[in-house]
Image (tube, rainbow, N blue to C red; front, top):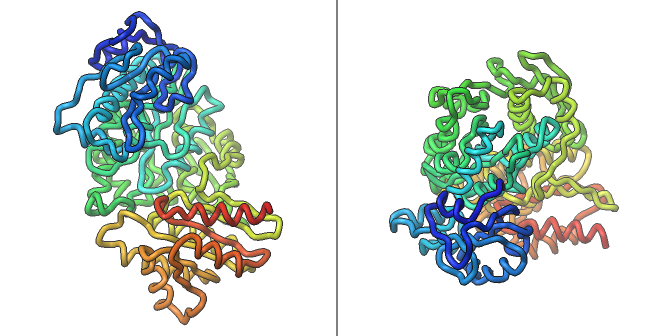
Amino acid sequence: MISLTLAEIASIVGGTVHDGDGATVVTGSVEFDSRKLTPGGLFVALPGEKVDGHDFAAKAIESGAAGVLAARPVGVPAVVVPPLPPGQAHERSVALTGDIDGSGAAVLAGLAKLARYVVRELSAKGLTVVGVTGSSGKTSTKDLIAQLLEPLGPTVAPPGSFNNELGHPWTALRADESTRHLVLEMSARGVGHIADLARTAPPRIGVVLNVGSAHVSEFGSREAIAQAKGELVEALPEDGVAVLNRDDPLVSAMESRTKARVVGVGEHPDAEVRAENIALDEQARPSFRLVTAQGSAEVKLQLHGEHHVGNALSAAAVALELGSTVDEIATRLSTVERRSARRMEVTTRADGVTILNDSYNANPESMRAALKALASMSRGKRSWAVLGEMGELGADSVSAHDEIGRLAVRLNIGKLVVVGEGAAPMHQGASHEGSWGEESVLVPDTDAAIALLREQLEPGDVVLVKASNFAQLWRVANALLEDGVA
């Protein structure tokens, strides 16, 4: 963050300084975890479901923090934010489980105001903010963009999927005077959320990947999801750039909602940044020809799954806008690595069993992409799809799970292990699609899945593990990986 006094921070967030000198300067990081504070940092005291950050305020100061951002006086130097009007408390707390009492919401609002000020100051000095949204692929694309921009100048991006009302301003406040690019992942659970995040850190480049069925239970329809995702392009300035997926009609239609210049990406012939001649190797790693108005070049990704082609095109479009050449982009795309855990994380054990750990999250679109990658990687080998529930699908949940089970049969997956009653329609769909018998099995929980796999896995098998995060199928992947080390 840029250096600011506590008095300046109080003025920015509309708060007051308590128990300290307003002239004290914050020079370190802004953290909500007191264990991660650097000397001169600002501790953000958030009340949560299990602990209240206000109880750690004194410890934070003892550890070298310059001050605390808090909802109430804490007996040490602090900027105390004003309470929010009652109607705003729950809306501002959507990111924090268990925190709907308004005090945490007020601190979040203050954090957003501080981030907005810092980003505005840095943008005037040359910082470019890139926002990324979509129903799936946000984290992988954010990681790709960051890796393409890093050679062009200091770049800040969030770890993992830190993309909500807490992670968004926290990431923005990692930027300082040396930062040239701020890459932000933007999530939404309702209309207005992305617009709010865009006000916190106004983007100049916005990337919309796709409109799928993730969170459809909260939005009501894919059209409502498109309405929310399009808030990103509506927030762009006239001299900004909207990167839109031409292969998704709901995304392509967002062109009419922005005053920014539009760059289309995809396999569509109208896409300005296009992929041609896509092919997959034996590890489902895609290669393609990157075609742009500035020239073309061959790309061979080290990531697994054809779905990464679209992510790479979006990243390439951003890098082109910020000064990279086509050849530089192709070279960098051919060397980029997976940075976020449990997203098509491929590991081969000593006995030859290959595990595709994609257990961080799941929706019908990402599930289909992962199954196709599994089918490609397991040619000539026995394949296993260990799948759990996809959450927040609303009335479409049964049909969506049923369809995934049927797809596993059509892709000739060797064995389907469905984990938990919430995912049972996958097993039913697979059983109805073909003449499957023991090829599909429903188990009650992760322990049962682990036991089954330990009994039946053979050297050379390829195993996909995927579900929404709450299903905790990462436990299955971890157990299989630990078995390989033993």
